[in-house]
Length: 391
Ligand SMILES: [Zn+2]
Image 1: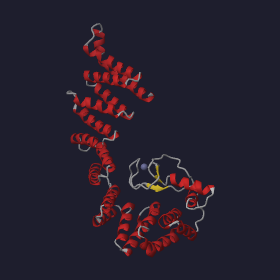
Image 2: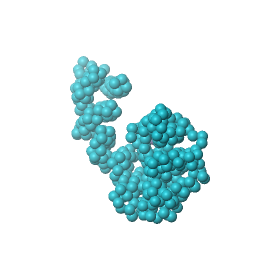
Image 3: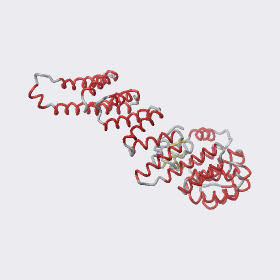
Image 4: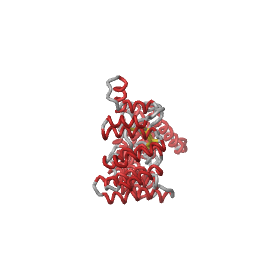
C-alpha cells in the first residue's frame, strides 16, 4: 500500500494547495463566513483518511463527492482511477471512470480521457470486447490517437483477429509515417497458418508468398511455405525454398528448419537429410546440430538420434547443449535423469528486445509484443538469468 498512499498523498497535497491558492482572496476577506465551496477540501481529506485506514469503498465515496463539487477535481478523480487500475482493482477503476462520464459538466477533453481509461480498465481486467468498445469511442473523438490504436492492435493480436490487426497496422503506418513491413509480414504469416489449419492450402500459399514479399526475412512465412511445398509433393521447390530460408532469415532462426523438413518422412529420407547434412558441413552451427538430433529422436526414435549425434561428432559444446544431448540417453545414471528433468522445464528461447524467456518458440514476444524477436538461448548458462513467462 505504501507507494499507492504516497502518490495519493502527493496528489492530495497538490490539490489542497491549489484550492487554497485559488481561494486566497476569499480566505482573507470572508474567513468567518465559509463559502459553500470550502467544503471541497474536507471530503478530499476524508477520502485520504479512509484510504489510509484501508477503507477504499468509503474513500471512493468521498472522492465521488469531491468530484461532483468541482470540475478541476475530476483530474484528481482520474488519477485515483489510474491508481486503482495499477493496483489490480479494475472494478473500482471502472466505477470511477464511468462516474466521470456521467457528469453533465465534463469538459470534452476529459470525456475522451475517460473513454481511453475505461478501455484500459477493461483490457487490464480481461474484458476485451468492452475494452475495444471504449477505445472505439475514444478514436471517434481522436481518430489518430496512437495509444488507443496500439491497444486495439494488442487486443486483436491476442484474439488472433489478424485481418483487424492488419488494418490497425496500416493505420499506424499512415499516422506515424514509418514502415511496419516486418510486422505486417508476420501477421500475413499468421493468416497463412490459420488457412493451413482450415485446409485451405491455396490461400495459405498466396498469403505466405505475400508475407515473404513484405519481408524477405519473415521466418514464419518461409517455414509455412516449405511445409506446404513438401505436403504438395513439390520436393525440388521445397529444397529451393529451404535454401532461400538459410540465405534470408537470421541465423538464430536456422534451428527451426530441421523440424519442418521432418514433417513428411519420405521427403526427409530422400531430400531433407542430405540438405541438412550439406548445411551442417557448410556452417557447423551447433544449435542447429543439437536441434536436428533432438528432432530426429522425437520423430524417428532415440536410436536414430544418437546415431546422428555420432555422425555429427559435435565438439566444444556448451553445458546447455551437453545437457540437452544427455537428456536423450536412456541410461539410469543420476546425471541423465537430472538432465531429463531439466530439459522438461528449461526455457529454450529468449526475446532479443526485452530478454523474456519462454519454453516454446513464439512468433510474437508475450511481453514486449515484438514480432520475430525470439531466439534460441545458447550461451553456457543453464538456467535463465532474466525474466520468465510461464508458457
Ligand atoms: Zn520481448
